[in-house]
Length: 337
Image 1 (cartoon, rainbow, N blue to C red):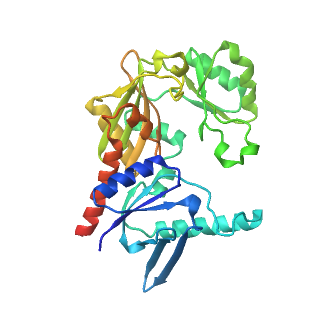
Image 2 (image 1 turned 90 degrees about the horizontal axis):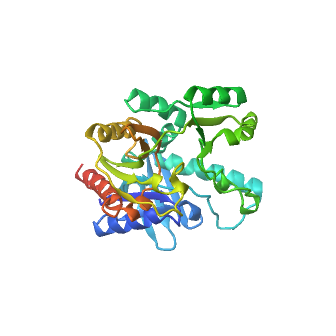
Image 3 (image 1 turned 180 degrees about the vertical axis):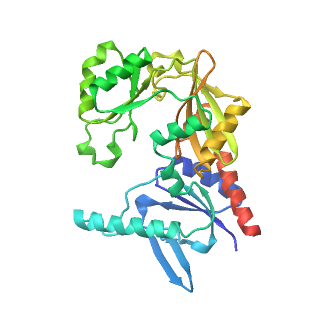
């Protein structure tokens, strides 16, 4: 029985498009579950008898079927709102239907004993930045002092203690939950890492409304995006200090700064690999600062971070191909057993 890769994502995921093409070229057939088309464009039947689940999914537009017994690897990519055959449901009906579909989806996924990139439970456990800082410190990373508070005097004391400017960062998402509300309800779309200097003191009174996260403004020679895929580490040097727009937050893609492949010191590469694997993850996107003195400073790990924008800027880092190989190798291993 030929095993398949289940890709759980949405219909506008370019990463999934490219990896699917690579998998097909390798002779491994992916089955794509676009959640924004689910269950509208799928038939679902799951049966439990004799201590096990059977059944699976059928994609109605193509007739492609994926029995759950044929799934040998799962790539968890992106979430999306479910859609239904009757179109827009009344609010209470939609809330109930969404709850049912989430229960059905994860009841199915959690029965699969196969290779994961990465398991949802591992992703959730790895998502909390406060815990990441503690774990990174214990694993030997250089980690900045940090504070979360809704007391303005504590922010002032922190600024005094670090002896320089500080930065404010969001903990959940820099897009300010814009993807969680209707377009007409969005009041802002992005909040970059923000430098807090003496001129910004009045802004700090706002912490009384919502506890906020601050760190020192760590001096940078450059930054690193370190992507762990399976047992390989891909590192890109980001010349963020070459443009004023990216000195504080390198995610401003309007600045045409240089990205290039980086060879990490062996101990840093190993530490990044071990950090990601310590959660049971097979994927992670770690952000590091390299200071002018050569210190490697840990900022965060995104367990479902993007890699394609880095690969497009540094084609030598073939992360698309390696992702496909990891999934294909897992399938072949399943078939041999």
